[in-house]
Amino acid sequence: MSGGRRRIYMDNHATTPMDPRVLEAMMPWFTERFGNAASRNHAFGWEAEEAVDRAREQVARLIGGKAKEVVWLSGATESDNLAIKGVLEFYKDKGRHVITATTEHKAVLDTCKALERKGLARVTYLPVDRTGRIDPEQVRQAIADDTVLVSIMFANNEIGTIQPIAEIGRIAKERGVLFHTDATQGFGKLPIDVDAMGIDLLSATGHKIYGPKGCGVLWVRSRGPRVRLTAQMDGGGHERGMRSGTLNVPGIVGIGAAAEIARAEMAAEAARVGAMRDRLQAKLEAELDEIYLNGHPTERLPGNLNLSFAYIEGESMLMGLNGSSKGDHPAIAVSSGSACTSATLEPSYVLKALGVGDELAHTSIRFGLGRFNTNEEVDQVADRVISEVKRLRDLSPLYEMAKEGVDLKTYFAGASH
Amino acid sequence: MASYSDKVIDHYSNPRNVGSFEKDEDGVGTGIVGAPECGDVMKLQLKISDEGVVEDARFKTFGCGSAIASSSYVTELVKGKSVDEVMGIKNSVIVEELSLPPVKIHCSVLAEDAIKAAVKDWQSRRPGSKETDAA
Image 1 (cartoon, chains in turn green, red):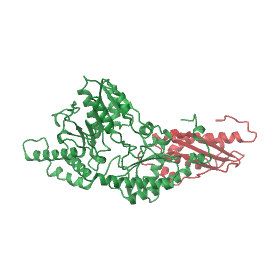
Image 2 (cartoon, chains in turn brown, blue):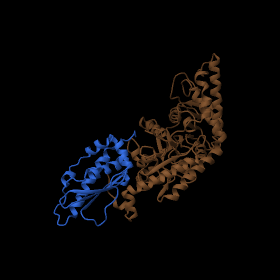
Image 3 (cartoon, one colour):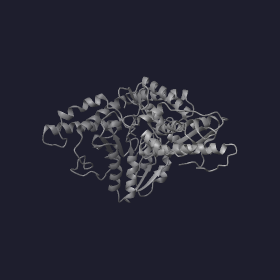
Image 4 (tube, chains in turn orange, brown):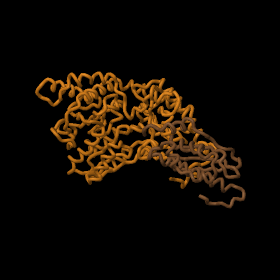
């Protein structure tokens, strides 16, 4: 469909292109140094194991933890599953209460729901404020005698809001409750110090930091306290009995390389990506009226911009941007919280949790800027969005009615289908 | 969300009969269906002659590409047809023309509702009209 058309990728929260430096680091581990890291008796195994341990170091350094505390698995989803299910199973005699938030990724929410269905957990889903932030006081109040785990994501993938992780970590520590954070979007983009922030378990994945898909991390604290968990994948006892299975050595080398690059370039990259995001936001706000920022204005991921464009619908905007429609403009990849973009026709639950209302959820677009975007791309995207919004507003009965002074809430009260 | 049919893309890129008739124009029936919270609102206007033939149509839609295409297509479909024929238009005609996938069928249903709403409105405005709920 996109044929020879130019493409601009601005959906870096969904996934990221692999950094060529990461690919280069991975290459030898496919056909030349292809040993199984668990082969104890020959050089093929030894060199693979060394590479894996180097990658543990690289990941640990990015978050202020120890190399031996890194557990390799298939991604952040598996990491969230292991953290929550593994902790609950191991500490079941202590309790079964989990505290989390309504805006967590499905990997956390669905895991919690599955445990509830099986009668293995009692879960408190804390609400967020209008900017998507958790109130640490609410965490404190929710902690009960049978609470074993608090799980709050570092930064939200849809709206970019960064949570008050250090405060939550401190409260969890005071009350002797383990604190897990799904750091998929924060890892490699924001400074993380697991000791200073009171984090006991941390989930991350390679493909959000310009590394490979199919490889992720669960960091598990070994001291202060020593965190235990029950493996969810059995078969040989790899990763200190926490996750069995032959290690994906090339993937692991990739994550390690990506982590090292992220650590070296984080500050400069955050500044550069943040400036591009601000540039995009400024251009759109200068040309368009009635656009609203979703998420926290300042405590947000540097590359995230989530905007609602009143009176037009998200999927129709994506169609105008993504190269489906006629014309020779570049095909732009972004995403939307609109119901029409989901298979279930449900609008984004994250936007719903903010209390913005279904109507603004339907009009939302998420831009995810990243390492490989440029100012030229930002300008092209801004021009394209502005022209599509204006065109779709000309097509929209709601814009017409609003300009005529019709109160849409009153007009449509009671209407539904 | 696989690729859209060529016809949906065509209607989206070059929508037919976008806009509104003048506020005081004779013989116009306006139907507004859907709701912003649902992500779909269609406004369809039919200009109908005294003999009950659709002469012209205009639309405006808040909704996805398939919703825009459905209402755009409807404005072409209704021209030259009698009120009776237009009231008999089924959403399946729209689904087939635009090759709408199952998840988008509701867009065609809304377009069918819009036709009926516009006709009802036109009937209620006719001077000396005795018809009320014809649908």
